[in-house]
Image 1 (cartoon, helix red, strand yellow):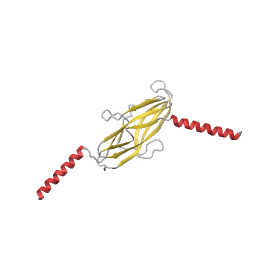
Image 2 (cartoon, one colour):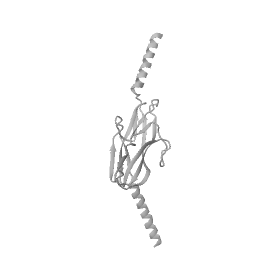
Image 3 (tube, one colour):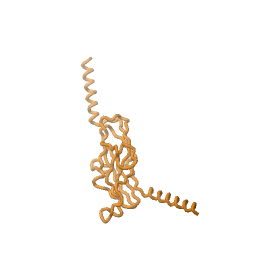
Length: 187
């Protein structure tokens, strides 16, 4: 009888853990986690945030360059700018929020400015860390905060393409013209 009770307890604990894992919000980056851009370009992520339990209020997005084991982000990219906070994004139970990246309107999850001196083919990898608070009801009405600074992540990277920005192309053009003038004078 004692053995049966232990088996039932283990089964119940496993079921509760599976339910808790299924209840966590999910983050999907759009157009995907891997972006490509030229040196000096600005790229960014949109998102779909799906929530399965309680109400959540997203308060911050970060591009973490370290391996995220939990919260907080210890090595955050200084080239990433958070678009989410403010305003906060609130998603109710069985709800979702989707917003495409739009640099001109500062919409989406955030933007990343590629280093103008980055070499084509180089990659910056990490995770987008989304921090949120949990409420028992709509936080704009009668909701009480029941958890704070929970986090979800999504893999993210930025690959530098071989096409330089127009300003860099202009500099290359001037250099070629200078070399041409110099070679004509040498002749």
